[in-house]
Image 1 (cartoon, rainbow, N blue to C red):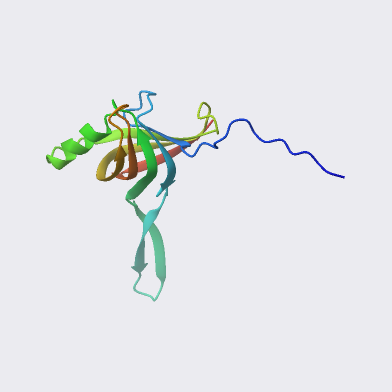
Image 2: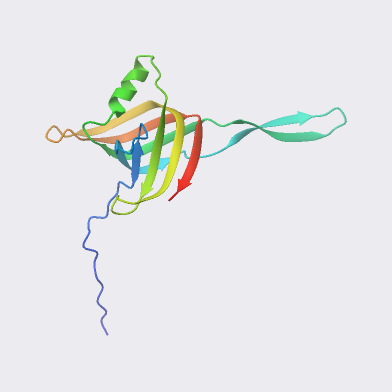
Amino acid sequence: MATTEYVNADYPIPTHRFVLDIDGDGRTDGTFGSVSGLELGVETIEYKDGVGGWHQMPGQRSVLNITLRRGVIPKDSPLFAWLYTVSENKVDKKDCRISLTDEAGSNKLVTWNITNAFPVKLTGHDLDGSTGEGTIEEVALMADRLTVEFH
């Protein structure tokens, strides 16, 4: 007996499911296909006492190196201006939000709140003169702190 399979009418499947909000104002400043480096960690301190004991304790938080890949940014995105300020030695640290959305891109599932971030690298890909949008291969950010918010 043959079975009938239904195909989702919303093809192609969206690939940009991570939304970047640079100033925390709720505006989409870029959408990306993947994000890495959203890690919480601390350095460890080793202490040896005078009687042969060895102790490990938590130290300072680890620096966050966040990389966003395969993205699309709108023509009015502040990402380029933000990167330009860093290249002029005017480090403008900002609080950012990266949100994982559903397939439609309308509902946020998880949001990572990033504190004191600044861009350290931007690798471009293609630019479209008719729309003003550009595709970004990679954006690298460094940050101080990370919190996670589930919706």
